[in-house]
Every structure is written in C-alpha cells, then in structure tokens.
Length: 205
Image 1 (cartoon, rainbow, N blue to C red):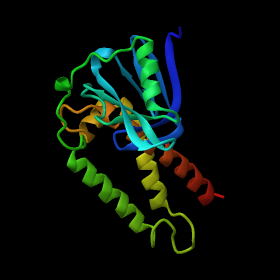
Image 2: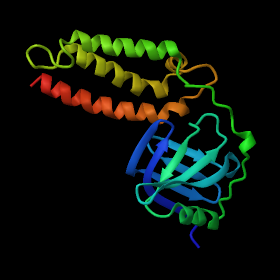
Image 3: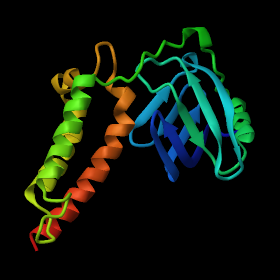
C-alpha cells in the first residue's frame, strides 16, 4: 500500500489561480501539502473536509480544502485532471482523515491589506505611468525611466515583503498574516521580475 498520494494539477489560492501543471498536492497520513507559489501545509486537525468542487470535467473540477487555518486564504482548491472523488478516496485510503470542525473556521473580515497601503500603491503606480508620456512608451517609442521605476518598486517590494516584518506591518491589517497573501505576492514577484528584465533589456540595447 502506498504511504502517500501525489498529484499534479492547478490551484486556486485566495485570489490567485494557476493552471496545470503549476500546482502539486502531496498527502501522507499525517500531512497534506498544496504547493503553488508557496507551500501550504495542513494536519488532519486543521481540515474539516475535502470536498469535490466544480462541474466541468478536465477543466474545472477539483478538491476544495475546507480548513481552519486563520493564516491561510479561506478559499483553497486543487484542480485535478481526473475525478476529484477518486482523488479524495485515495487520500482517505492512505489514512489521512479530516478531523477539524467547521465551527473552528476563523471569521474573515474583508481584505487583509491596509486601505492606506493599497491606495498609496495604486496612486504611485498610476502616477509613474502617467509621467511616461502616453503610458509605458514615451514620445520616442521607448520605455522611459518612470515605467522602469514602477516595475522596480513592485519587484523590490514583492521580494522584500516575505522577509520584512516591518514592511508586512505597513501592508497588512493588525492580526492578519502574510501567509494569506503569499500566493498573490509570489505571482506579482514573478511577473514584475520578468517584465523588468525584458523592458530593461529593450531600453538599454
């Protein structure tokens, strides 16, 4: 008998969705791990249920993880290519049995971001693009320094945020966790890094 279950697919973690094959689900008797732009680890006591989710075979069917971890996004779904019912049955067969309670699920009160931080980021981003003459291209058809600066600030922030408690305190509301936005920050870091490298190469060649 296998001691664990492993599957590759897609995921939805909070606001962030990823298609196949960018997510991986690994389950043992003691632990369930969902990996996509970060690792999300659960013990049986932290999961109230594993539920089939979605109605479109091969495209939008998966397993919803109903959990009680306050530091993780409430919505966590693993999209699988096969039958979610069969995947749940395989997980049950190796001995991983949800032991949590729906009553233990923490209340979610709006977005984890501070409104001041969110509004400031939007204003700075838009102001820099407006400085760059009709959007990201200036009058000579080249990327100007405001566009590069906007991408650099976003890139630097997303790289620093996981490691800086001070920066997290500026961005997040009290009693909210970075784990709630880890997937979103990871996606922004990936996209901004790629764009910054590409635009810098175009601008300086």
